[in-house]
Amino acid sequence: MYRPYTGSLADSRPFQNVESQLRGLTQDFVMSFNTGNYDQAAALFASDGVLIAPIHEAAYGQKPVEWVLRQLGEAGYGDLRLETTRVEHSGDMAMELGRFSVVVRQADGTLVPERGKYVRVWKRLGAWLLMADCWSRTASVVSDRAA
Image (cartoon, rainbow, N blue to C red; front, top):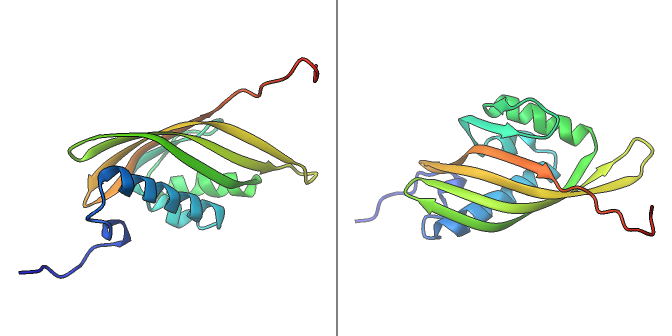
């Protein structure tokens, strides 16, 4: 006998493997951030999930995460891209590693690209939700000619 579907969008991928689900959720996060839907991006965090962003205090919970994401967007961060490079999981826990790029619009209108790496910890709480999301920038490489 079939059970009726009662899940959320995050649960609509029951037949995908864990890696595919997390890659998809990561791209949902990117789309939400890039379109200014910070509440939707924050909804991917568990109620006690944490966002650890450079030069910001750690944000625990969906509302504080939304606030930090909004601050980043208002500071000119945009065109975020996340590339998952590795997913490991066991039971209801998973780890995602990857690279990111983002463009920061300065007050004078110039665009400054940033690159870096990230680690995300996911937990299946009915749906996969972020328990921790942390990233760091990669130092810019300065060529000898530029010096």
